[in-house]
Image 1 (cartoon, chains in turn red, blue):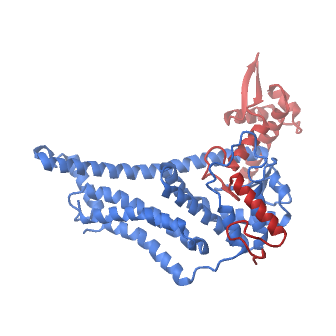
Image 2 (cartoon, one colour):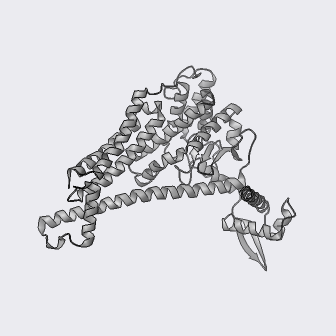
Image 3 (cartoon, chains in turn yellow, green):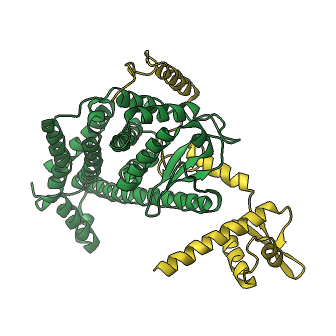
Amino acid sequence: MLGTVTIVNRLGELERAIMDVLWESQDPLTVRQVSGNLIERDLAHTTVMTVLDRLAKKGLARRGRDGRAWQYRAAETREAYVTELMLNALEQTGDRHAALARFARSVSETEAAALRRALESLGRGAVRGGIQGAAGDGTGE
Amino acid sequence: MSAAALVLAVFAAACVPAGSALAAARWPRRSPAVTIVLWQALGLGWCLAAVGALAGFGTADARSGVAGGALDQISRLLDGSSAASGTRGLLAGILALRLLALAASLVLLLLLCWLLAAAFAVVLRARRRQRMLLSLLAHGDPKVPGALVVDHPAATAYCVPGLRSRIVISAGALDLLDQDELAAVLAHERAHVRERHDLVLLPFTALLRAFRWSAVAREAHAAVALLVEMLADDHALRHRPARELATALLRVGAAGGAQAPVGALAAAAGDADGQVAARVSRLLRPVPRLPVAAVALIAVTAVAMVAVPGAFLALPF
């Protein structure tokens, strides 16, 4: 069992390292070029190929042919993926309700302004009205 | 048609104003856990009553209960021995109405099951994608042990619930909050993960998806979502002072959409407006918990909400 976990973690690490190589490169890379750009240099050619194949199957990498050699590039930029995560977290795309549990749900600009005012009054040690009935000495404990 | 069908129909209809009243009430925030149980019972009771009422209207003879009668009716129809061919006029009309009601009840039952399954499938897919991207992009940080950090200036914190759960904090939130506030956020998110609050909310999300036009579906979803957050707040309070959690909420809430990724819209319609404020008020001015007798009464009501339609479905009347 421990062995399996280690292998899974190892695969995850490799996928991440190889995606980093693809993201940093302007051009599509062959398996050999990817191996060459990895910090860990002594990986078997077939290992790198297997991981690139997995990434392509997951839709994270795109595969194309240049002459006889397969070339790989990242499907999207790193920034695009970060944006996707954040849009999801801020309830802007995808399923807005169920998939994630957010600490504070996204609010409208008016509401955000009210919260800012409440925070300022709280900082001064006295909440006056700011948010529905939150008035109090602010110590609450 | 039987008296049982009428009772079930009235029960199902009464669930709607009951849901609205429960959503508008202020006492639930005094004891979120038991109120969440009541919401679940109300939802399940409505489903049983609505399906049962339609089945009851479609059933000639409910001597073995509405469910048994409906099954009898269906099996007789399948046998072709329902004497439909010989009936004329009014009788044929009644028979047709019955068949319609029976079919509607089956459709509603299948629809409800399908909605729940579909909502679950969508959620699982979105979470799988989140975990995949997080494994490529996120990194740990000693300031938030056990959580993942995503490098983005917008302030947000959330968890991806599931068997392989993840707690995620953006770099923006990491900068915005101090060490104590971060600990409070983590305590809150860990409660969600540990108690699987996402599963509590899922049926209401499924209902909302199906009945988007329905005000009561929206109110129910918002009310349960808020109660779940309050429950997690209460758990965090066992480990952290209320003020830390309150200021963390205000900071993240106020930062909200600021520095949101390009392409982000303004928060839609503000259906979460008031929720952060309500939680902060509750943290800073704690309300007494409901007395034991009231909690017991709510629990009994919850059992009745399921038991009453269940009895009319299963027992002969």
